[in-house]
Amino acid sequence: MKRRPHRGRIPRRFRVTSVLIVTGLTLSSPFALTPAFLYAAEEDHAPGEDSAGTVEAVHDETPAIPFEYKGFTEFRTLAHAVTEQESSDAVKKRELRVNVDAKYGSDDLHIRAVGNLYGNAGLAAASLDDEYVYTDKPAVRRNLSFADRGVEASFRELFIGMKIGNTRLRIGNQIYGWGTADVFNPTSYFNPFDLREVLFRADDELKLGVPSLSALFFLGDATLELVVVPVHVPMLLAPAGNFWEIRYREGPFPVEIEEPTGLPVRFANAAVGARCAASLAGVDFAASVYRGPDREPIFRPIRTLIAPNEPVSVLVRPEYHAVTMAGIDFSMNFDRVVVQAEAVYSPDKAGVVDQAYTPSMDFPFEVQTGHYVSYSAGFNYFVPLGLLLEGHEGETVLTVEWNQSRYFDAGIMPPLITDVLVVRLQDEFFGGRMKTSFTLLRDVRAGATVLWPVLGWDFQNGLSVEIAYASISAKSGTERSIFSFYDDNDILTARVRYAL
Image (cartoon, rainbow, N blue to C red; front, top):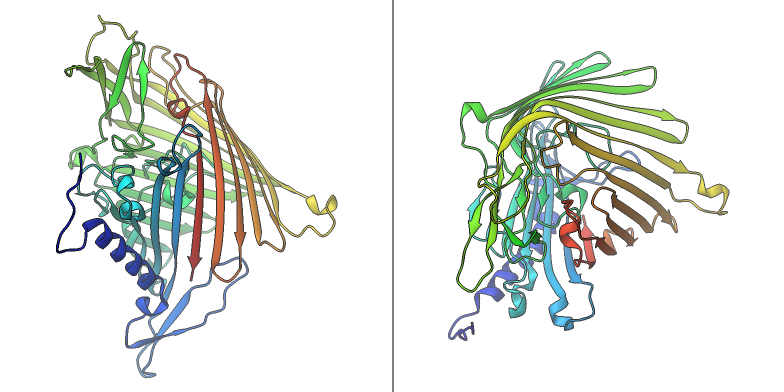
């Protein structure tokens, strides 16, 4: 449909883009984060820590209230790496991201906020207006994030924290780093995934914060953490029409997937969990329990869809069910090798009973609960590359991890992510300026492979650049896999970041 030219006013897409750019530059400035009656002061940091500003009161007679902040502004673009298209059609996303990480107060009582503002910088180009959207319709989500088609604001963390004796309390949006594995964490029960770009996002964007109350008790060499999440937050999938929309067929039928929705807000749908961690003889280990909505939904075929001049398709609904889980995890060092593993068991995990996709199939598909186990195991090897390359100063790390999930009942559809081998080699050169990594993901069950090289350069003045390529290949078959949905989605990404 043709667009009418705007007369007498600036087009909306230019106004939105201008506001985002100005907002990004403003928030990236230290003056935007410093109240008028406070001043910024330098603070010493331990090696390897990010620098942050500390703000104190001007009046000497008033107690100083610590204020720490850091952040960055980033521009990222994504292009579909295929040759049979116009160059203008290859670009699928142009995004401006502004990140702010601030802490106001002391460890005894403080407010912590980690927020991101995203804007589709491609709004200035009419061809990208409908290419990448954050959501189909404006929405304020349960974790206080807001999204419209071309802009999104979210708080991964936004909580009040306090320390009383040997107890740390937090209330608000939080991220829980339970587990020891590097890539897949079965014992990380609470934070749902943002899969709108599958796994091809920064690590600090893959998990969504959840509004919760947590208490961490320090018991000598051990800790006990209790968590309550009163409101269920669902995972995010790419909206219809996006580059990362899930498109596949079951037999002769195309599949359409509904947007995931959270369970009703009621006491029965609250999540509770506990984790006890300790160290003994050089081994870090923990045991955890959980009861609440499953972190990952089941994908249940509900009915057929019939539209004029369109083939009959199957509507699949992501559904959440309560689950009980118990898990363990551990990590140990052997000189240059760090071994880590974690596993969970559930006696009542819900799953969809599989059946053949034929015109006589029964809708909706049956759901039943059963015994389930999931585990990840792997290691990090700190390669002494300096012994082979004279003058090599960077840290070389080889990571290998295997993840597998299984229902005991073979009639239940397997999870979308299982039987995945991850191999990653990371290295640094030129005094840490050049950062490289190469990742291989192999879905053994579905025969899908992802090759993902990344090359970055840090100018060590706040400015850094990075380019990456991801090649996705999958064979056609009956096995469902999250990677096999994107057989033709090879991508080339580039980003430019300026950090405070």
